Image (cartoon, rainbow, N blue to C red; front, top):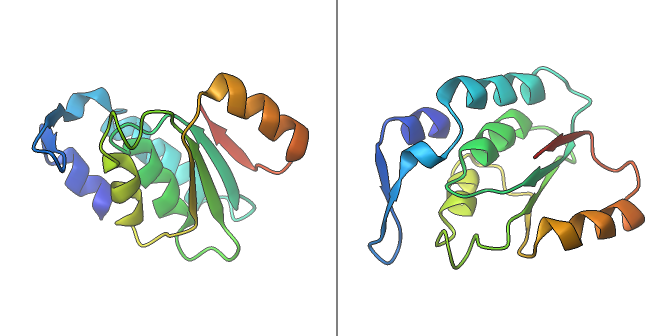
Length: 127
């Protein structure tokens, strides 16, 4: 499981060779709590997450959505590509779940827009 693999390292190396401290992510207990919530509720298919960083919460959520028909995960993170070298998105895709949309803009801009255009379209939101 990708989630367990992430917690097996103190550091994660980006494409450029930059080393990231893995302790910046959520804890193992928090990650498995998220996973359990999503996996144990079949009504959850559309999820939204603010912030991705190294992808610990993204991996937990995407792992819970895996093999769920019509599931989709939206991530809002203005620094995912540049600041985090896309590590979080790549880790989320390692779960095998591919219906991931990354919006690289500030949540202060994205969330009001999503609220106007996607009213009631998320079953689970993690901020």
